Length: 308
Figure (cartoon, rainbow, N blue to C red):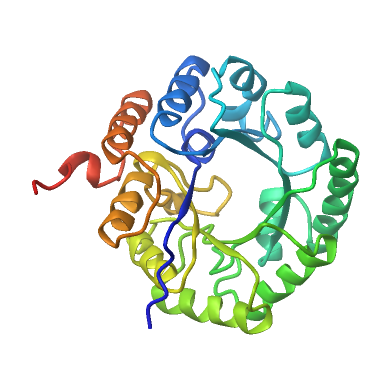
């Protein structure tokens, strides 16, 4: 039975996760140019950069410069990612970004060690330290992420019990996040295991707001999104043109986030409101492609909208 939402909130990850997955060297001005283009499409949430190790992720070494150079629109939230207290303090010090409390857990402990350099206990300790920083900053809104919810290139199949445990960890830190994202970090989600995992989570927490962070690594990204929509999921992370991936996933095949303009088109065809200007998104996707100087996997920017 379909339970399509009336509207969907699409959060843009291209300037952050997309550029983070490209080789270093993209000019700060080009990153800002894409952010400002995306802000004209109706998107209300744009992840601009990551405040992470400059040595491990040199693509994001200019995070402070990006934040400083954006010409902000009042109706857009300009966000960022951090994984520890030091990263949050860097983001807060810019005074140019919209700060939401981020809490993260990894269903795969091996991935947590590779991506965050922490085991489960270390991840929990880091989140508690972040909560102290959030309290000092007066932050009240929280978003939670479960990495590798559908599989891991290091550990293989991830059992739903491990995802439940990860969510329990997050809820023990903050009981009322605005949304808990189930992340297909390495592109192993399928329509079947996605439906099964959402059912398992909802059997434990029927009213927990869920979001999806999907990749199109094996060509199932849009099929997985369709299943999520039919299950009433109303929050999605996407990336313009299909930019992105995960540089710590364990193989090069993890590239390819769910494409923003393609998902917006699917939602429009299903009668779901997104508030997005699809032709403007297509132009932003073409700009992103020019910036990275190689083809991007999004379909709509190539095919265009059909004649009516």
